[in-house]
Length: 557
Image (cartoon, rainbow, N blue to C red; front, side):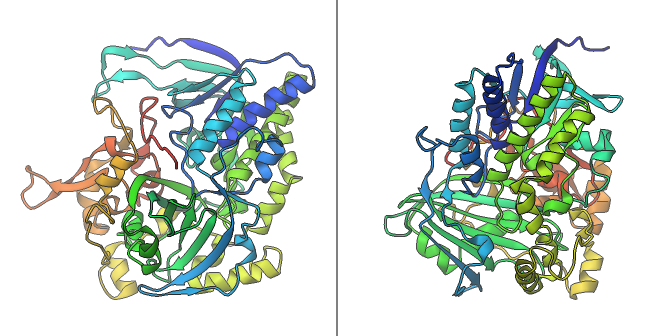
């Protein structure tokens, strides 16, 4: 029996209240006022329980984007933790650190700011609301509605279903929000964006597959004197093997507050690749211990990062649709920064929306102006200069450093251009192929958790503030458990129990099959990083949106 759904009509639907979506809403309102146009109906929705609840980043922000959007951002009390005061880069071995004699130009942070993206997006939301635009937090999009290649809106998530998907007494069917234009700014590997790529294949027909990192981060309060506000440290090397990609960071948010994290490439051949464990090992290095020891871990988070740059960006528009921020790959892999680019994407999207309003036309004919704006912007110039950066590390760390130097010298090209890559999950080796390549079984290096300095996944998840109603359908949909319980066990050793940074996937004894194990899911632990959807070797895991307002609740992240 079909469910009767309320239909809501709006002019402009913005999905995602991150830097891109908020910048878009703010700029639309500003341009409407400047050009004395009639104010359209604008609906901004976000799946987090409040604006910023799912906002996680390093984060060192280049102010170029926010200065263009809100030139007086300092006067308006933008929450900038500290201006960058010093920076250094180290190559780490397990017990030692070699400081680079100079900083690569791509990592020059002079004039940048250390921020809490959680707090910064909250401030941006206040600026948007001051323009008379309402933001609906806790409203989650479930399905992108496309008719004859034209995006006409979004269906929101059904609320009040039990684990079997049957309505409970508090059942509320999701609504259908119809819009003249839908702007997806829902972050990395968003579920609606994925549907857009599936339903409108032309969006990605000229793009290389995206490459992702999983970044794991903790915020610590440390004794005074361990770090200075504005101090930025980047590292390469330990704990990553030289044939894999990984980078670490330590940021002084204040004299007592530290953001420390590690980002791990998902195109690893190792089926035991574990970003959380590598980060815990990273903290055992003397460089980290002299800063963090004796401190207190306050917050934890994890998210994926789109890292292949310019050549993996999709077409930015379709009939009734624009893509912005991480949803469209607006991230500089050379600098590992995207906040300023996300804001710029929101500005350009807003200018294009104004074109559509003036012409009363939101077809690709008009929305293609967004692509033209990008092609003539500083964002395109910056991303084009870093277009081959991640691809340079295909041969490992040292080859990557060589290629990075060549790319700086040649304006981004280096010794090759547009190197073809595969999807991340296609790089993972079966146990048999791993043995053939490396001569031994994969052995994950571990550290003993004391839950005071090094933490197990469940303890860290608790520090993320993650909350889900357990009496609802799993938002991690497994299309074939037989593959997980049998074939994957034999071929890969069930890598999901390693690559998930939140202890969602666990192999447990199967009482119906003595001596065998089965996959047990705990979706309530999920921090919405999307790693599983990206790197599962069989692609039988699909991340869909849970009830609105659920997931992590990041603070000071």
